[in-house]
Image (tube, rainbow, N blue to C red; front, side, top):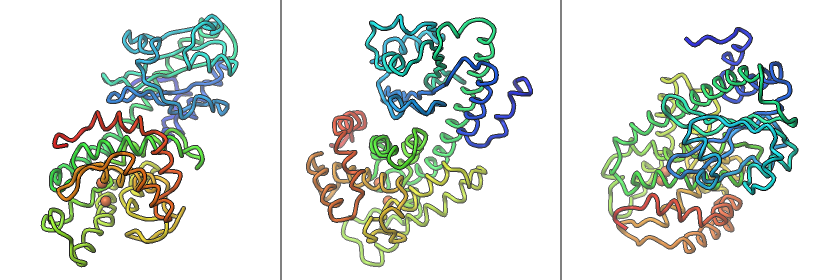
Length: 375
Ligand SMILES: [Fe+2]
Ligand SMILES: [Fe+2]
């Protein structure tokens, strides 16, 4: 067990990552009052996207819900490659540089920064930024306290990351038993995660959710059809139209998925946290329609959790743009038109459809990365 001074250990009593990070932010105020905030940006290895994840400062609007590809920020890329932190004791010296991050920091009145690549157990997680409104803060004795704080923050983020990964892996290993049983391939699952993130990223703010919500939707959208494991082959693989009775059984994949999930979550002692709730809402409600015509509960409008409305849009979009034995893959504009019609008819969430439509260039990047081999 790693040793930390006793007054640092309060954060360990917190169960949520947010609670831990806020407790660590209080410690920051105590030991280094000149440091006004810390923030975290997480990196996704597959897409190279760096996304804001957490900030202790509420005045950070311009750099929350921000995404950029790491290779487009040479100074951060260099920090990642070198694996060493960077101190800038006077950001005014960067005035000539046009990097979005530096310019935003300057505009918001920050004067000095300490940037740390977050690495844990061979895993590059992203970056941790400490900032101050005063120049020349990151030097001297308080600096070693900050290094300790950085370790604790990295550890907390890694733990959360590992937990979400364990949860997803547990669900996915169950899913892999059924992989290839129906038309929904592994590529579909990957695309689902990214499409859902594109939508979540744009709509989260309006619903009072932050970057962590966006990350959870991204992590959990791919396991929406967990319950299909419980659907027999003669229904799942039936080439023709399902009978009414078979369709009723097929629809039960939502309820069966939620039941299986309850078992998995209880097994991991995670049944009641917010991540589990988002995962459960996705599995249970991704076929609900806003006009109440969906299943399994016939929920109406905003009674359908936002995460489920997002995943519904991503799922239908991917089904339309994918090849099936009975149809060709539709073009993106055709599929988006259909989603808009479904939104006008009161079935899909208008803002989620608009959000996907607004980012079709990002959608194309994902389609190129996760192309089906047979289309
Ligand atoms: Fe489904
Ligand atoms: Fe699906």
